[in-house]
Image (cartoon, rainbow, N blue to C red; front, side, top):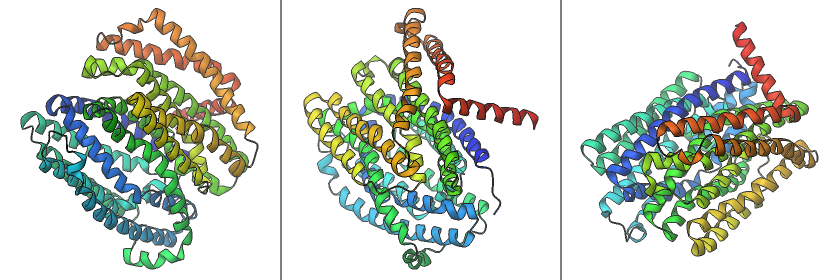
Length: 518
């Protein structure tokens, strides 16, 4: 099995992911507008909450894929085909067990749908059809698509992303056509199952072509599971870690439904489309390095590992500040132009979503290195994250509505992501003082904060920010001006003081030079 460059794979991942991101972003917002206009806020809110409910069933999976991916780093680095086959067999066995468990839980949960949606305008027939359509699509991942973890661990996420986004885009196009001509909700939901099956077939074909030597056996996986006790240990630890972020993502729409209304879930979902789009954009670039980090740590060069972290954390902090600020200043005018002023949230809520987005974006580099080191044993941290989130969101949501609900994830992320995880990585991973992290953080954030202040002043006085929502031309010009001004001043102020940022710039310039020479 030929070994390819980590940098080459990371760049390919980033390039393909970026292209897919922009295509999918355009189609997503275009299709969502049509779905809201043609099917109504209530139906969009219904599908959102159904998917949230089903996501809780998928809790059984959390940890298995990540554990297998982590264990695959070393055999992939060593080209140990025999061990890879054994691990994928174990993975197939575990996923089949999880799939069977989810089928049982899904049937039980469906019995309570009449109680959950007792006040909705939709018939139980369409609710049940939608529930089982989404459930069937989800189950394909456990019985068919589990081999994609090998592609991910081998830094071939670009293949997964490319095929998935292509199939999703075509599905959305067909759904738009059906909505415009028939408005048939059953046909709309049926496409979820049909295109999930198509994606599974394509993915199976691609894995066979990429790894012709792959020979996994689910029945053999059951016997081999005892050979790899570390899988069970990592699964338990990662499960608890994953559940923290998962709870915030999936429970928030349900809390909004409980304390506000179903239409508010759809309105909030419009903003979350932008937020999740930004997360996909940053993941398409920085997330493409995840498997490479695991591979790098397998080599054991401590200085190289730490230098890479400095480089990635500087880029991550820049991205977190840049995109969270763009979201706050440019998001509402975008929503106004696309959906109308009646679907706009108050500024205070948009600010809270921006803060939440910042914490999510800044966690990437640290989390990737924690996972690369295999340090999953601080299981109290995600448990505490869940407790803080649920307690704060429930109490404050009952008092302040949507604003109170959004306080929950912010407080939990502040304590765990902002404070604990960097300390944990530096003490147990790098084995150096956490003071170095705070120096890195301040060295990067101080120039970024100054850049933001300058950008806000210029944007307010020279680019007439209050007219951004007048028409698309104003929005495009104003948004481009905001982004370019912030990026310019950030570069000017970051480059002299941040060694990690300078290292990233030099790496980028060298890559450009090599490409020109080639």
